[in-house]
Amino acid sequence: MQQTHTMSKPPSAASFSWEAFFSLGFRPFYIAGAAYAAISVPLWVASVVGLIEINGPLEGVLWHSHELIFGFAVAILIGFLYTAVQNWTGQKTPTGPALVGLLALWLSARVFLFVGGGGLGQILDLLFLPLAALGIAIPLFKTRNTRNYFTVGLLLVLALANALFHAVALDIITLDPADIFLWAVDVFAIFITIIGGRIIPLFTNNALGVKRAQRKQRLEDVLGAGMVVLLLSDIYFGMSYEAATLRAAGLLVLAGLHIVKIGLWRPQITWGKPMLWILPVSYAWLPIALLLRAGALLDAPWDQVLAVHAITVGSIAGMMLAMMTRSALGHSGRPLTPSWVEIAIFYLIVMSAAVRVFGVLLYPQGYEIVLGTSALCWVGAFGLFTAKYWSIVTRSRGWL
Image (tube, rainbow, N blue to C red; front, side):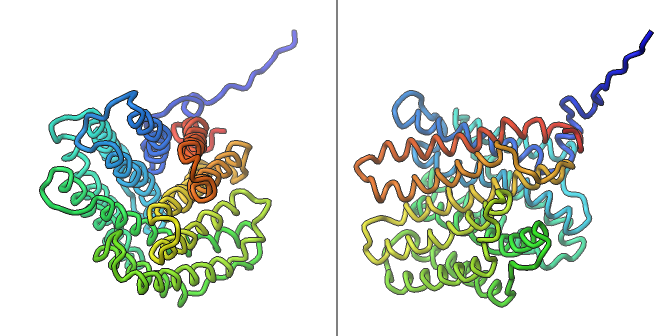
């Protein structure tokens, strides 16, 4: 009698594993952040058209703008930094119960900021960033990794901006929340400038096996300092049009330097390789946004909000999806080979940015159609990531 043998899947690898899910920061925060990105935009649209009501302390566009940066984007940033800092230092960042607690804190803040809770959502939200920052500060300072101390400083700036945002909502202080939002966006732009400047040429050269993408440290230093100056300028001037000519000139110089930096990477060599081209394409939205903002200050027929969307949708979300797919695949033992899902994710987020920015300029009479199309592309990108990567981040390393 012929004996048959069947290959069975290892139970620990084939099914959901709490231990795997909370083994590294990217696993819970990438999936939670992506799912929230896919859900929060439709919730905001539903509130705008009157289908639902946001009962938390932040209403309408305030809730939308706050949750875009301090909800979704912060979650992805923490997931990335917890993974990166562990690689940089060789020291553990929060895992297990500590990571469970941080995720629960973040999730609870999101829920109570939406449904209300007598200020509980704001308290939880204010606690998250300082506590999360400790998770990278301890290993960085313990190993004296001075090169990356800036990450702790920028997280604390975000925490301060978040506190100011809530203080405005509670009428404790008088500031324009749009200005505070801009400061937070600037912080993310600094992260992209510094970390993107390190990893994009590195990943490109490693993948192609030749050192064709160049990196100039002096240019990196100048751009890093320039983006910090931009943050300080925006803290002083906000979204106003004061000193417009001088500020526009500074923005044009910064945009030009970013374009030179991108040129050194020779982005054309990445065409045909989605895991590579999404990086310079997403980064390119940063100088596009700076140019748009300079134009707005010089009385071009658009406002600075358009430039902010170029950064948030094109650069921040684009770079995040590029790194989320790459690090989730790499750190779970999978090849960096894109399927149709990754390709669709990248095209959708680029389309979301392009439609949101250029659609408004070219088809102003169809503003609602433009916003709806951009939102659908956004939801599609993050929804696809959530659907595919849930099974990756919740299973043991190496299970395909």
